[in-house]
Image 1 (cartoon, rainbow, N blue to C red):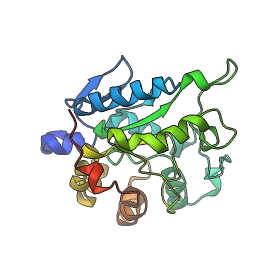
Image 2: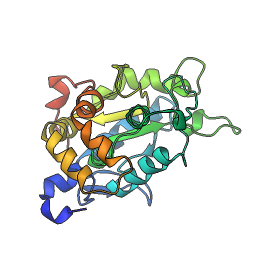
Image 3: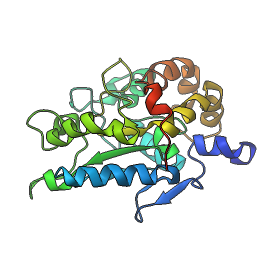
Image 4: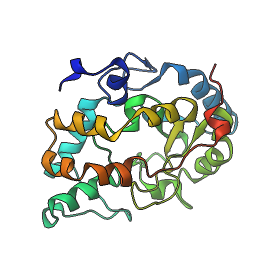
Length: 240
């Protein structure tokens, strides 16, 4: 990477800095200016009977790169929108890229880099023989986290959060576990650009680099900015 040529803000946007992160434990980190909002929502959820926890928070560039390369190389399973495993060996290069992008962002383009986006669940809703999968069915009717999903839909905005992947727009699949803190995330979203994406990818060791760069504009349009936008009220909500 050519991280030394990027500004401090560009390093944050592309997951090459963790200076903005506060660590909740040895594994989970979030943006330091989101901490109070998270704790307030967590406390409210507890009163409603949910042990609200973060399954995934801040994720740096190298971690996202590993996730991507493992999926592209076939080391990690890739599933379609209906949760069915895919045989990527039968796909063309761009088809394989698009299939991975349904659930996994390119390194430098993941909202998890910002520390404003979190994947949440409630372990107290799982039975002793269940483990977290972070799959849509878990948050749908008859799924263990359906009650939590309903509560989040009704109350997360009270704390500044919203669902960036609320419906299927033909890009990223619906992610009912993925919350974004609007007062910070919307600003970062506006600062991120196609040019920054392309330059970061070009200087990385990502698999399928040439094909990604050839299709970078379409990827940016279909999978990065093709998302739910928070309301003005949420964007302007002050964090403590």
